[in-house]
Structures are given as structure tokens and as C-alpha cells.
View 1 (tube, one colour):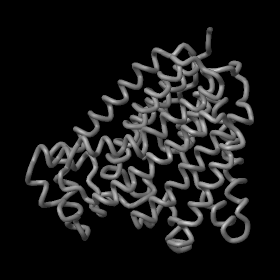
View 2 (cartoon, one colour):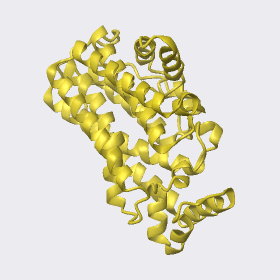
View 3 (cartoon, rainbow, N blue to C red):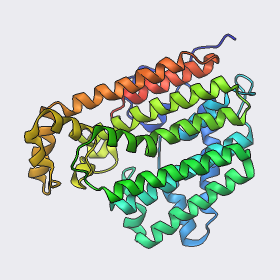
Length: 343
């Protein structure tokens, strides 16, 4: 089947400055994501009163919308005509998965005591910890309501299983805060459960809901895993390298909290003198700057970037095997942009 190539403006390749540029040049996704955002906003506002207002403002903040976008692209593997809008059912599933993601962000911020999210105060910083936990719970309830109404039993079970993985990964991090073993394997296992799994679920759910062939569903799962692993590693690199304004949260926030991500793990492995600079977690700007500089000097950031590229290459190899040309082009474009992003 012939397909027209997606537009790829120079400003969106290699260095992406705005969230919406992730999807620029893929108009059918941009249009359907607008429908997804409207649905998420409506579900958040359905809480009513002060909670509905607070949630509505929270979910209206700009975001990349990667997970719902992957649901939409995954659906192309099935019974959806080229260039046509996504069905209401697919939009509802995409909205449910984005709502799940937003709920985990609310809970993560409470657990990590993070004061900023997407460049603005976190919900618990604005309204209190108890209130934020309940708001996150409400978003979870709306997620499962949408899934229960709009998808197959098979996909509902997938989402329930994925939620269990997310919670277990967060619990493991809580019980092993500031893991001093600096285990690369443990880090990769954690981000697989927290990030890569949901990326894969998004692509697979879209494909399965539109009756994609089993071979395509397997490929979509592998692609989502590779892209998700790369995305999280790049996120952890940006925690060291991005400006706070671009990142939407304080720089080196994980290191401040004693959470040791891949750049630190690689740096300690290459230079043992880095360890006393990061354990215990540095407090104060001088100690933090010294730790960040040492991680970079030891090659931790460069090594982490190489690992991210490895996962990206794996994903691109699977993307090339997809039978739908639109999927190949869209996923290649988005994957390139995510690897080169600066925020």
C-alpha cells in the first residue's frame, strides 16, 4: 500500500523545543489527540466542585501525549482506513491510558515530594498531600471506567496487569531508596516496569482493539518497549543536562532525592571517586554542582546516552518490519525526535 511521507520540519528533528512538535507533521494524529485531550479534560472535570476545578487545570497543562498517540498509531495496524479519524472507541481507550499516566504522575509527586510538574506547582504543593492522593485515585477510577465501557475484556486485563506492574515498580523504589549497589540491571528492570511497559501497552492495545494480526501486535509490543526504555534513559540524562525552565522541574531532582539513575550508575562504575560525592545525596548547590560535574566528567552521561541509542536502534529495527507504511513512517519520525529531544 503506497503512503505519502509525513512532513518533518527541521525544527522538529534532533532538537524539539515544544511538546506539540513531537507530533507535528502527522496531522491525523494531531487531530485525534485533540479529541483525546477533550475527553481527558471532561473526565477530570467530572469530579465536580473544587476537586474538578483543580484536576481540570492539572490535566490541561501541556504534555507530549505519547501514550495516547501510540494507542492511535497502534490502531493503524488493524481495521482503520488510511487517513480516517480514529473511532470513538479508540479515542476513549487512548484517553483512559493518558488518564492512568496522569494519575501515576500525581502519586509519584506525592511519594517523591516533588514540588514541580510540567513547569508548574505539583498538585500536592498546591492542595496538600491527602487531597492530591485522592485526586490521583479519582483519575484512576475514571481510567478504569473508560476502559470498562470501551474495550475488550482482553485489553481491560492488559491494563489491569500493567497497573499492577507500575505499582510494584514504585513500591520497589520506595523499599530500596537510594540503592547503594548502583546496579545497572536493577535500574533497567525498574524503568521497564515504570515506563517501557506502558509504552508497549499503548501500541499493543490500539492494535489489538482494531483486530491487528498477531505478528503486528508482537512487533508493536517490542517497539513500545524499546522506545520506552530509551525515553526514560533520555529523561534521566536531561535531569542532569537540561535547564530547569525547559525541563519543567528542578535540575538533578533525582540526585537531590538520592535516586541514582543510569548516568550516576555508569559514572560510579567508571570512577569510584564519584561515589562519595553522591552518597549521601548531595545537599546544597555547591555539593550538587560538584556531583553533577563529576558524573559528567566520569563519562556517566555519555555512557547513558549510548544505552539510550541502543534501545532506539532496537526499536527502529522492529519498526522497519511493520507492514503498514504509515506506522513505519510515523514511529520512525517520533522515535528520532524523542532520542534528540532537549526537554
